[in-house]
Image 1 (spheres, rainbow, N blue to C red):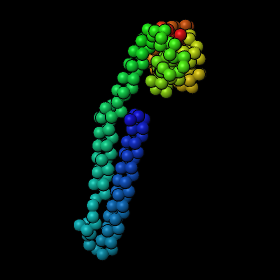
Image 2: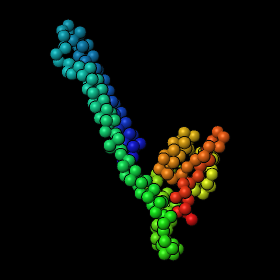
Image 3: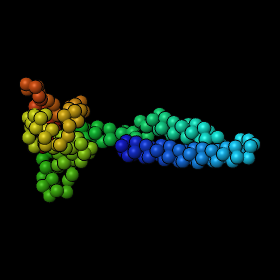
Length: 196
């Protein structure tokens, strides 16, 4: 499950718990006030008749919201695991490495478009998440692009571009060279060879 989606669902659940608990607390408070007014008019105490103390509803609401939110945070990493994505990324790196070793027979078959391994660039981009594709595609089409140009092309923030480039660099899909106050970004040798 997508982490953002899971966060949103749990956030809505906690908000619903707080709203329902708040409504129940308010209702209990109003009932308590009504019974106290009736008791003061009659000159007796109606404390034993008025029902549940609103404080119990408030404490219960806080307890349930804490259990739901805290429980989710405790299992968030396992629930929104990116294990499948990591496996796909590893497979993409392996395919890039294997792409340079393709035989001419495979290349001949690729001309009709029936062999998906004939297009390693498309294969790699299909395996990557959308944000990484938006970074890697301009690097592949314009090797040596600066991080500033990449930010403009991808419509990501400066920090998002930097984080994504770092992640792709760690996996060996690209590398960067310092140029003044920015970096020039190039596709890895394996990725560049598999394109040709």
